[in-house]
Image (tube, rainbow, N blue to C red; front, side, top):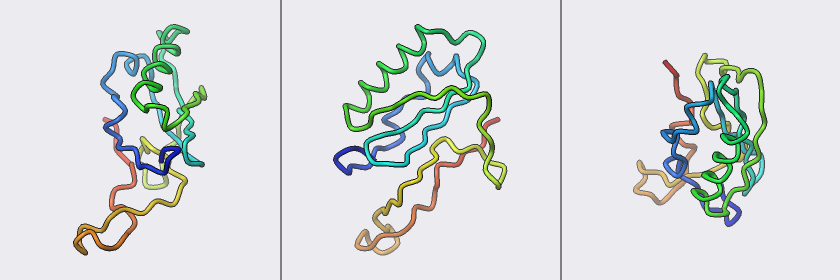
Length: 117
């Protein structure tokens, strides 16, 4: 969620960019609107230039809606279900309910969990 309260689609972040290839794992975590932590497990080839490039790319793609701070970690644990969470969203978000014609809200069916192969 951005500073303005706007929901940011995951497609706003381009995980196919070159800079993501020098990370073993990464996960976005959000505890407050407009601020996110990018947890990164570096690959051996990850260097200071990659950190700068990633920060510039995120700043550009998110258009000032979300300030992203990087945190370097040695591992990112799987969820209790054995899945990897690309986004660890700690905010309570409501989405339009497609089953009710978009008039109500419901908890999203997808919670950002994906399985890496």
